[in-house]
Image (cartoon, rainbow, N blue to C red):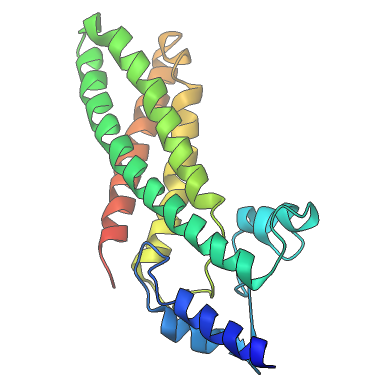
Length: 211
């Protein structure tokens, strides 16, 4: 019982550090986690990509890579923080690449094909950074508790917009090489690219805002 008490205070001390990109208050979360001094280690709601790896019956639990214990959840929260920070940094890099890519694409549509090679190479870099950033967000360990709020808020809008720019990016890449085959494919590529950039820009704005 004494060891359990020390463990309780040790876990409370660990949770005082900022593990999330939004810098949420872990003292408040900790109160929600404790039920008869037994911590709830996973949130009620997780996205399916998190469940696949980090769920109670996820791949990492079944293989023993990360068993569902207090100690491992502490480590996972640190991993979560680093992954989300990397996601944010890569997001800014991807955004800058998208803007420059759009400038080059505009020149090509106006008949300047001297930038074609640069446009194509940059497209591959932007695609790689985009899906790397997306993967860091989708497969990050889950938070301590679900922070979903009722109504519309910045996090929900961020997720909704992700459902727009992810398929838009996929379509953009599918028709990247096909756009020279016909004007139809060129228009699909252009419209998909503009949709991806617009929705991605809005997604970045919503995550900066807090409402």
